[in-house]
Length: 148
Image (tube, rainbow, N blue to C red; front, side, top):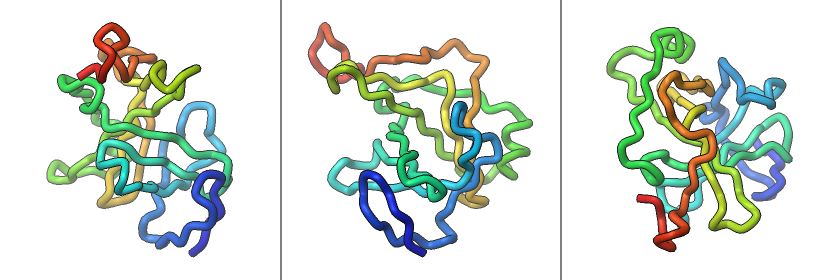
């Protein structure tokens, strides 16, 4: 099927790659169906979460380990049930990026990751009980490079 996007034009996607949010993205509750868009030039640590329902709804997501190597979210049992996850399922964890005034001032939300079960193509955004930053800088301004 073809979808129209704001940033990538017309994309051809396979219906089997559509991810359905069982617990929608906060503030975007009316949108529940998305597809991941990757750019091989950007590497595996970044992707875009594109709504298939609204072309202007697209989020940049980062692998949280790119920003904080000790990131270890605890996913509660009710989340695993929503994702229809079983112990052997490999769940993906991504964090939403917010582009700052300048790119170097961009942040990620470590407190509310996106958890995806690719076996069932179900996803949720959760609020962790752990003490993680809502606006974690991606770059260490003092060192002039990545936080990691």
